Amino acid sequence: MYWKSAAFTVPQATYKKYLLRWKTEKGSNGLGARVRLDYAAGGQWILGETEPQFSTSWKLETGDIEAGKTITNVRFYADDYPDNCPNGTYRVYYDFLLLAATPFEFPDAEVLMPKLENLYADLHPPGRGGDISQYQGSQSPIITIRGNMDLADWGTPKGQYLMKAWDMRTAPFQWFSSNEIKCKVTPRVFTPNYTTPKPTFTADMKFKSLSNLNALHSGGTLDGTLIWPELSAFGI
Image (cartoon, rainbow, N blue to C red; front, side, top):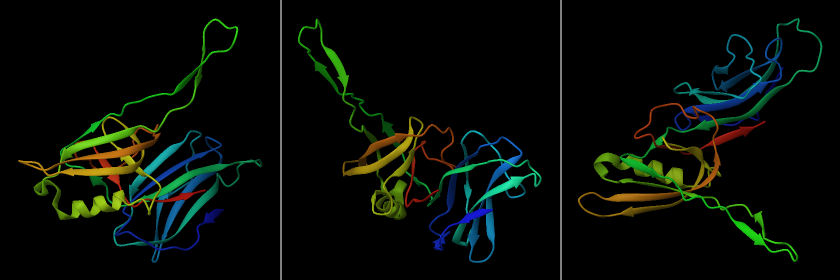
């Protein structure tokens, strides 16, 4: 049994990687998880190619989409295993499937950790000795990247990819990964500084939420910092 997405066209030339988060109610002998990408010709199993997979805790699958293919549908399976498993209620959970373009890497960059500030209101109730602190939440901190923008390091395509990553019409957020922090961000301001001997830049991104996954992204990184531009997500 499977759920099949509405037909669409996603060329591998743009979307090269996938990121899938899933879990099952049972650790074995029940409904297992399997996911398949349908291509215009053929397809690719990204989970459970030979048999259904089980995990009672959230798991992450990530990898490459086959070169030269165009995705037309995605199939999310709830597959009984073994075929004679006992009658009962079983569940398979799919959090999301994320399709992403080639990682954008900032060359010669460093991440400046943000200033974290909580807002408290001090209340002074009549007749009470001392005030009461009430937590009012906090603003989203700004993560800043600082680095070198020399064309010998970047090259023309880098600038084009950066424009795509900063264009928020295609996605409400971007995944950001570095040696210091892994999180969702909304790109805010990219500021070039045309100084000598080499131009530099600063880039501000608004923090959205932390990732509690150890290996959120696959693929290599340069100085531990990357962005995946042009995200497309399927929520189930």
